[in-house]
Every structure is written in structure tokens, then in C-alpha cells.
Image 1 (cartoon, helix red, strand yellow):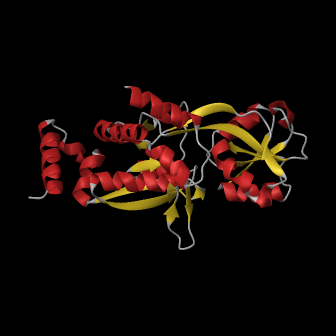
Image 2 (cartoon, rainbow, N blue to C red):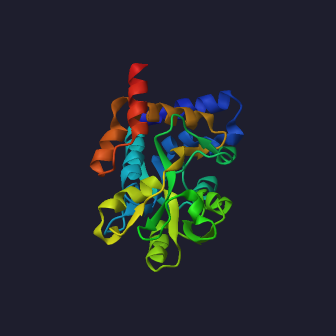
Length: 270
């Protein structure tokens, strides 16, 4: 009997002895090991964290994390394409087992999805604007039109500042609208804008405001699935200890995050 079958048998025994046989379908780890495949929700509109390459394959920082989870479980990986607006719904529908898709751990989301801790990345809020726009303070967007992405919490922040949101399916569409002067700026996460600083196409644009509202990113599992939540917590802890997350920043030419370095140091000291 190989090790995968042994693990499945043991998990089946635990489920039965705990009187949870009627809930086996919600035991994600059991299902993954039984089927030999893990389905991971990855972004397709957020390079270099998640996007499609020239042959349509999802690649990036988070796609590599998904691959590592599959490797540790010794199962096949199926990457499920998502954007901000549908990632939680796709998880809840059972079409994916795990969200690794730039999901900020904000109040309210934790009521509908299980947040894996420790967190694996952190971002903050900023606005990408033409350098000639005159927008230098957050208060300057009052009365302005800002481009945004469907499902992003930044849109609500913009409305609270007095701006009107012109929302799009993904970041690429929002950038195109900004370039076509349909909005004053594009409000989103600093991690999305960072790679654009080296792109000559966007030389006349920048994030000129002081970043605000730093928030960590969480991997998401089905709410109430304690077994899988605990398993993923141990994997993310391992990533911090080993420095894997920092190595992936280097691989994908992502500016080093102070958050990741601090977490690496904290976990090494334990």
C-alpha cells in the first residue's frame, strides 16, 4: 500500500470516528488526497503575482506557491483562473480548494472564508496617476473619477474620499481607461503598480501619494474546514522560515517587501 493510499485511509478513519461521515464532502484535505488533484484559485490579471503567459498558462509568484502546495501533498495541480470579483464565490462553489489570489485580510471577508495564518504577503493602498495630474494628497481626489477593479475594497475607500468609481473587470482594463483619460487615477494595491515603474509605457505616471491602509494577504480555505486550515498554516509557516517567499520575490523581480523580511526574522527567532 503506497503512502498516498495510507493517508487517505487514515483520514477516512478519523472522519468516521468523529461522526462526520455526512460531511466528508467538506473535508478538503480528504478530497484532495482521494482524487490526487488540488484545485487552486490563482489571479490572471495581476502580474507578476498571477497572469497568463503566451501559451495561456497561469504563471507568477502565487502560481509558484500553488505548485509548492501540490508538491508537498504529492498531488497534481489544477490552477483555476479568477479575478477579485469572483475568487471567493469560486471557492464556495467547490470549483477550487484553495485561494492564493492577492486576497487582503479585511474585516468581513473572514466571515465567509477561512483565513490561513500566518499571512504570506502584505500590500497597501495607492493611486496611480499621471504625474501632471496635480494629485498629491488623498484629499485631492474629492470630486474626481477614479478607475477601480470589481470586487476590490479600495473602491469603497475612494467613495469615502468623495471620488466616483469607474469599475472594471481587471487591472488591465482599468489601466487602459486611465491611459484614455476616462479617469483621474487608478486606485488599487501598491504591489500591482510596483512593476509598472520600470515600464517605459508608464513613465509619465506614478504612485505619488503616501501609501495607506497596509493589509496582509491571506490564503483562503472553505469556512469551517479546520483540518485544511491547520495544514496550510504549517505550509505558510515553513515558507516564512525557509525564506521561500523572499526567493520568489527575486525570481519574479518583485521589490523586496519589508513585511516578508520581518516575518522571516520573527519565525527564525522562534
